Image (cartoon, rainbow, N blue to C red; front, side, top):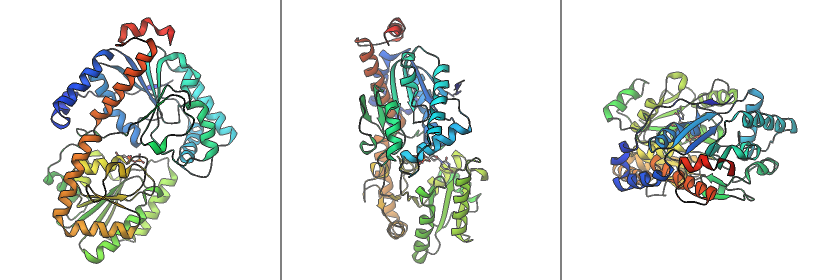
Length: 430
Ligand code: UDP
């Protein structure tokens, strides 16, 4: 059984002062002919990670503009998620693929979910590889299908992408964060659409400097001394050990500097705990390094406070699909230093709205520049925020989706302005 996710409500009008009156009006205009269209998002989990983060905002806003939208979570057990975790890593370039048995498990769970998925959708959006086989298995259940890929497919394990391709190649529309992530061999329309952050969510809403400082001080941070922050899962690709090395170099010139590494943990991810422990060991008891996770009660507001309080936000990733944390930091007007990889350069213009680095030494040098020259940090932060406002806020993402729905529904019935009535009339034609 697929599990529907219960969602709160959001109002697009609330975003007017941030996103612009004309821009919001354009979204409403685009949405008008789609009023009543039945849309379903299908994903593997409602907790943790970027996909859930995004859908908690996007789905209520789609509803607010008149789409009859739902978000459903596929059914899966441990054997399925073991296989999809391997698949995820392999697609992002890890050397190990799935066994034949694991491919069978993946397909079997997709068949179960395909059978259980209700029909009659105008558009079904399938997120990531876990449920990717739905469209080829039950194409008749929706008039239009979208595969939304949230991961970095630039250098996939060859056998894994080759075996996944037959399931994704015929989706009428696909979405990728970046051009480099688009695999060869897709037959449908490819859209390069990066994700976005919600400026009004607790994680990103404006916190007063006093509130941010108050929250951070409760974790032992000395708010009168400089603070470097990285928010990310404890994962080798996020390079927290490199961040500690960079911090140590900064400390030689800025002795008062502190470092907070804030990362969420899943209780069922032993690898995550191993790497967390390795990070703690690398910090070697330094009282100015704070290693915090969600088991220390670090939720959205706390992440917000750390990002808001930081004198420099770091995201020293070695690999990064998009990096929501980058837009989160820039939106708070913070100076930013991050790895020159994946989606990070999309969000940061070198030297204009932050710095892109390739080593702990470069990272340290740029952090020092910022910490020693507050005016520089302010200017970088201001330009970073303007860039995020224009490109990486949820209303822009909503607009991109509405355009895709329009194309799909026009392609489906050959008539402009596919509303709910025409949609159900023509269900058989799907
Ligand atoms: N995040 C969080 N708490 C943490 C660590 C991360 O809420 O302790 C959030 C972070 O703010 C961001 C998301 O998890 O919204 C991570 O997304 P990103 O694209 O940066 O990286 P991913 O984890 O998807 O690789």
